[in-house]
Image (cartoon, rainbow, N blue to C red; front, side):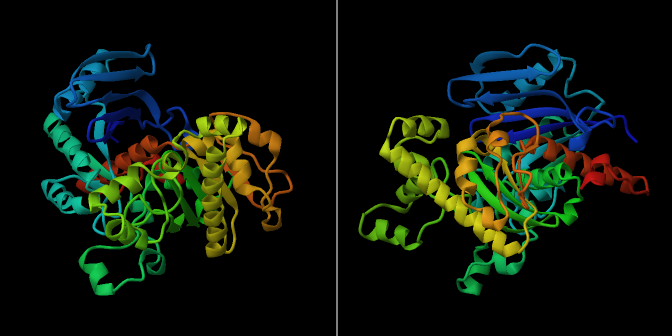
Length: 427
């Protein structure tokens, strides 16, 4: 086995780059999560916007940040490389095994982590119409990283991949089939690395194999999605063709009658672009009450603010509909897992979402629910037939695991043998 065990995980946005350097060596910390020691992490912000900022957090040194101009992603990644090198973790290290790229949309073409080639990049360009806000930035990050280390394996890990195995009756919309196929209109789902990681960690928390557990995963952040995971496989998810469908989110509407778009265009005189901005950036909690921070909404509710209370109630109502719907879809639910910023930190959301569900075998323990922590934990009562868990997500570790597995498999093929990464034993 090669001594190269480090994976640099990159999440390239239109004006930012988030990164983590993770060592996947055997015997590293956090073996219960499949291995992976976080050596450094950080973010470069405001790329191409005048004065930017890089915040770098090495595991063994004090965090540091600096402000300077990052005219493009090449300048941003050069700054990342400099910060890592200052900690003895440079990108020229022979211990760097690969770079893993978070890639939002893989369409129906990419349904598993994929070694990046020129052909793969061109196919990703063809998918831009499905994710015009995300895929271009992801591609830019890939191109810059490949120029920086052209000799290093690089892997695209797709947000949509975990949901790609959904049955057709869950993935297809009830529109003309020829039209749908011609324009690639179907349910793809997003937050896939989070749903995959959390469903697997929930099974581990219960002391069971993922193949033996049915889990409803609730990824509740500024973006929010739900999934029904039966035996380790996603069978339904709330986001659809785009991340707009499904739950009420920080600034996105989630589900609504499609005719709302026609009405706003014909009667309201709004352009398609204006409606797009309305539904994606000026709706959800922000559109309902002017705030998209659940902590602020909670504070306002405590002061008797009716708009905040209504926004919270709408958010919870939609969430409960999906919990009930996915319970019915799977027929048996072993656990409900809350994750991401709101899911991990808001006891009030968890309590309201599951209130009155005792007849379904779901019962929270109020004391356990109120406890804050950074580790996976059960918050259901001892009498609850369905376990309720809070499982902090770790999408970067999931990307690193998948990237490392792909590279090791490719090495095994090149050497005429097969090789299983240690994390694969946990899947």
